[in-house]
Image: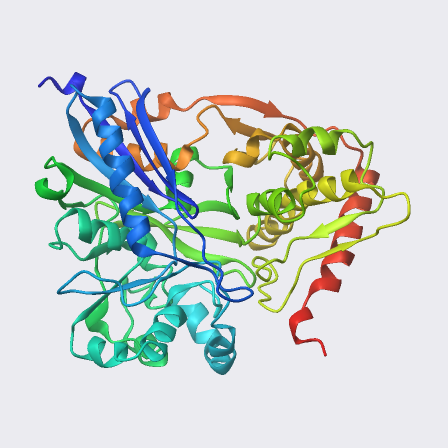
Length: 499
């Protein structure tokens, strides 16, 4: 079959659902499929998923997308995934020993507190904070809480993986237990300076090395899909954590670009080349590793983003649809002093407070549901600004409308009010991608470039800006909004420990 007829498939393993997207030689989407899976909340601030349901969802969208792409052939599959989420399974029968513990889950806050004296060491070696967000304490929790799990792990019977490893293991028929550098760098077990699992960290977190996946370059050929499982033998080429895939799509090695993905959470990143920048309130992480060259990034991980809009729809019943939030917010000339701090699972960057809890403040007798909806939408913009302020501190930047740009993607970018307010509150140009699924586009690009299906220049040429937003707000109004926001956040901090 002529290479022009083939497609590259991005398998995007998200937090609330899985999507597969087929791109042709010209970068056009020629088929896609999406399927959600359940979120499990056994206790407040605990978040789980069924690994088998994740797998079945992934297989479904892959097979449907392949069928939509026929009679074309598939050049390769690239995988991008929700990071930090932990799955541990039995190597012999492939059965998970427990549900997947999701990146949002805060159940290991006490474990993190008990290890607090290692914070500096952990940050130096991994670039990460000692926080329940990351994988290591989740692994330890499963091994110590599920009967017989630790003993089985020490016997070499169990395997750990983030969701990329779990799916890769399954679609290759259990032949490949592997990951790549960007995902490994989110485990609290991988030293981003030496590019190896760190023996001292493994000991601190009580994680046996026998359960860990092998770490390869991001652009590696990870093996062939099993024909009995998938129906086809297809190379799996390229894996990246979802936010790194989005960054690769938006910027690659282009300078002056900050990206933010408005998904379940908000993930603000900037690539820093081959230099590890240590920032007090930001994550230093691996962006990707290609041809044995490692590129790093600074990241602000915000736990509650698009999930806030879903929360005010599903739990508070303030809007009938996510799309309605933009019109409701626009119906007001200002927020009239009402703020919503969405610390529904604690606060991530730049506060890193697992004990923070959500609040709505500034209500008066004249406040309506419109004020609460607007405050919830505004919270995404304020949180983004908090992180970008930290970028300024780390690099000595001075952001301006004509300087650094923010490139954005994710479902919440469809909210026109949010995008304009984001530009206003940052005093910065915001460019919204024409392709909404930039995470999938990024991993498709890595896979396609690695196999020669696309050239680097072709990939860069496929990127299109859908709409650009320019700041319109006065400095005084901007400062007033931000000052009140910071005051509101201060009220939410450490709330769960308050007696």
